[in-house]
Image (cartoon, rainbow, N blue to C red; front, top):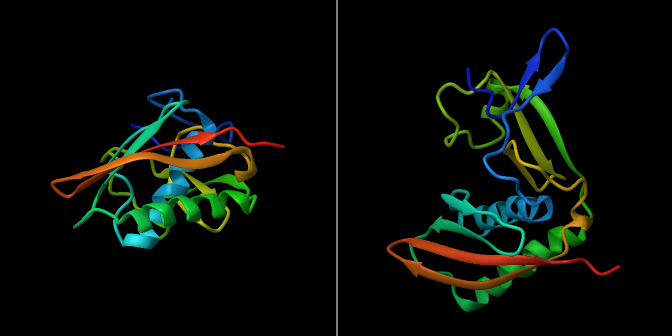
Length: 167
């Protein structure tokens, strides 16, 4: 059985998670969740089709009918930073697949995913089935910045980073 997003160990009542494919940098990975939800809200698209999350820079691909305008690119970054500045708690909930089905997109999960899923929530802004590491509050992320972007054959690729927060 694949435990992709979580499974309650019935004997220990503890979650068992697969190890993430990569050692994601928690602030960057949490920023990806916020970016994905921002794209869904602004463009009505799906979450990123491909993501490459690294400590220094990251990229996500979105299927869009046309490239965002420069004004829209600026607005994406503004909205992501607005969510970050709200100091939202980031937390996980374990729930049955049937409950998660009405809450999050499960289309990327493998067929043999466990019956119990781990759903990561960024306040009331985003919810996503995920096994990665995350910050506990968006105040730990820093400032989101889009560095470059390009559009080709219906795929908009955005490259971005987070700068350390200043206290």
